[in-house]
Length: 291
Image 1 (cartoon, rainbow, N blue to C red):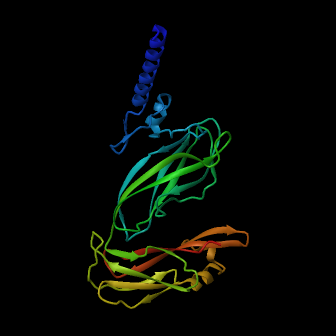
Image 2: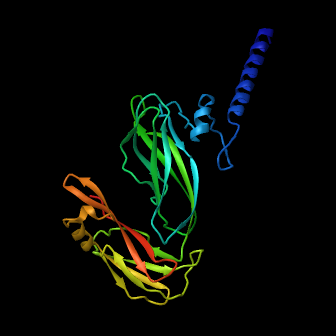
Image 3: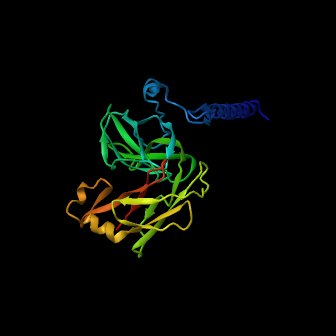
């Protein structure tokens, strides 16, 4: 074999080895906020911004993405009780780019964790928007859920992914609603919700208590089957009538949506009152069927 051929083969092998080394070096894991590892690198030019906002740039994969900062990217809000209102905390969304960014929506791994605003708002370049995020206690024990934000804007891919938030919390409480979140049945007028005494691990406790009332008054109190059990029967016709009343817009329990036929109730939060000392109130969210 000619010497030139050997040199060509050796040179090709050296380039392959160099490519493998470079790719291996790029894939080296970096420390993430939760102590795990990630192959995602932080842009060195943005480290000063990240130090202030705690944001990490999403990988572009050859597409055009918004420079949306999320601070913090991960948070632990601690204990969330079933006996109380939903928890709301603020997250900072920052536009680190040079053009306005529109937040078109988001995808959450659980409907129990969601931004408490309507999508479609715009963040101007350099602006920081304080986003309220709501957490509702649906199930007992440790929870970890993620919200992925979707954006659009000049020069951006349609419905682009740009930033995410992870929320950790632990659900506990002496009274448990089953289910906590009710979706309107297709045909039935009524839906029963059980209210059970619970230990810290969610197991049933046979201890008598009384359900005293429901606000707004759109549900009937059912007699207990045994000590520790309670129940209410939601009346969807009563909710419709309340939503159609003259002063419905002043009822804070309602969440509304606009349709071609006018305003329609999207959900309503029921407050159930009890004589149980550590749990005088428990809440049940009821959702209307989308049209």
